[in-house]
Image: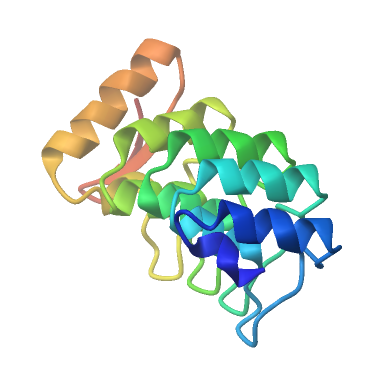
Amino acid sequence: MMAASLRDADALVDFLLAKGADVDIKTYNGQTALHFTASKSNLDTARKLIAHKASARVKDRRGQLPLHRAAAVGSVPLVKLLLDSKSPINATDVDGSTALHHAIAEGHGDTALVLLKAGAETDKEDGSGSLALDLAPDPKVRNYILRAAEEEGVEVASKSGGMRMEI
């Protein structure tokens, strides 16, 4: 099922699904087809896998869910699909990072906003003690997230000068 990570592999994925392939089979690193699909932002294949009962709740050996991957690549539609498929929004990986940490660290403000509106916790610290907002790669991304969250009525915790502020 790792063919799910390939673009233009629809025929192969359809064939494997028709033959009853295990959609949640794991690689040595614990990754499923949904992990690979999320990493490649392959929304159509993700929909097929979920329609065939692929779980959005399987963590790999790094503790990452497909949601972590989708957030890291900034795929808003895939993040929404995974959340609709009951992926735990505030799950942490081995580094203590949530999907929100990954989205913001990679500069994906729109993806971060989807996670915030869905209830992502903004006061969770990763393994190094950073809040998600503090991982913004530059002030432009940080300000975009704060402004968009305020417009949506979502409070965002951040550390500034050693104090936590609610915006």
